[in-house]
Image (cartoon, rainbow, N blue to C red; front, top):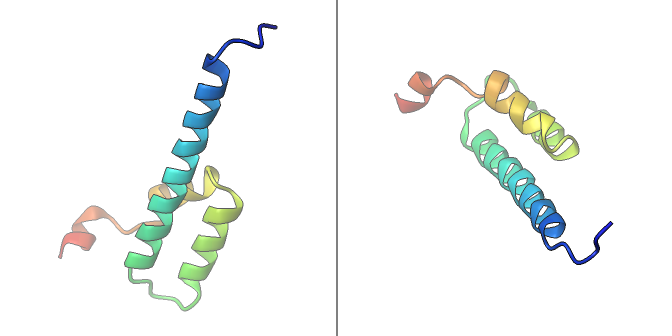
Length: 72
């Protein structure tokens, strides 16, 4: 294994930045959305932080209201 290969750390850094960015974007979206049930923001936030890839993906696919509802 070549330890002088700078590509491996770069790819790892990009992955970390993407995961952190996705998590932050999901958290911002969660807190800007109105929820019908109490505690909904809390549980979506917990899911997003505990499962940093699956949580935001679940939020954007299933939890976030449709774009039409957000515009009006």
